[in-house]
Image (tube, rainbow, N blue to C red; front, side, top):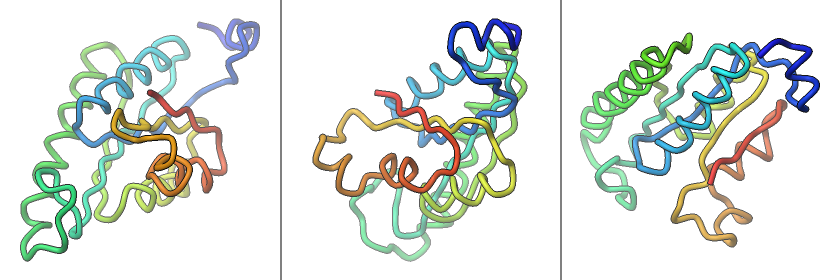
Length: 153
């Protein structure tokens, strides 16, 4: 889609899209929406996967566990590679960044470095309205992002 066509349908020019994923089924939908946007606009996609030593992919409610980073970093890297492969197979120019820290920290750090035109995050199927309003990762990104944020349900 050319820039005049994007403007005609209400899409701002997009050169770079940041998408945050975590390997859940909900984040697969977020990646799918991002892929469609990138193909329609020709934007590059930057995939961000965060891992935090106080959080585990297998134990999201876990407290700090010794060695959690050692377990979570390879899984985060595998999620990033999978997303990058999926996007590249579809014809999307993409890069992946794996970040040690919380999801909002990762997005804010990458925002500063990469200056994307749009951030895409998933609200998560399990996120209830109350959780969204009072502290979910998506809400934190929406509240702090200096660029537009698309929240995928």
